[in-house]
Length: 134
Image (cartoon, rainbow, N blue to C red; front, side, top):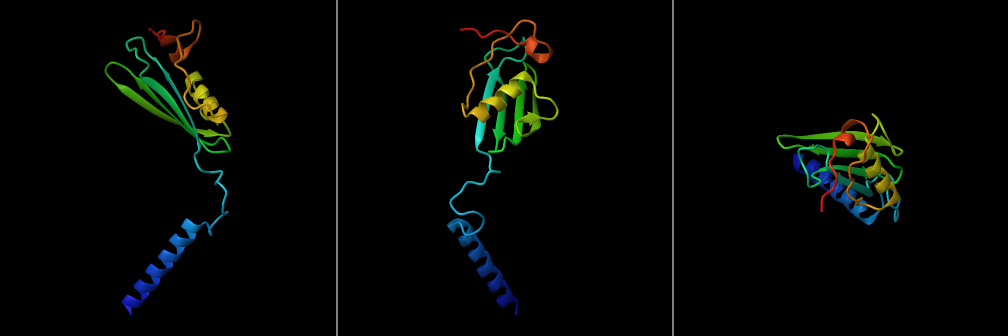
């Protein structure tokens, strides 16, 4: 009896996998709008003590602009990593300028943004960045 039940479950699992592979489940021939498809990354110097643009913000979004931004702030003695949710292209909590640029880059389809040099008069960690060196 147990062998028959196991055989039926295995056959059902095989049918479900076949249907998924052949596109019978969901919308055949279309891309799921919830799937992550847009990527944007911005590299920058977040701290005075480090150079080489080792800090980064990475945006992973779906077709609706929903997803996540991962940021890594690299210092000489430690690295901190943050994740922020993004809904329709807006972060909650508010995104840093680098994170917002990564989201914009992902939504525009430009992918990898150029390195961000330091800008005078910016607040928060953006004001602690060092300019890019050649």
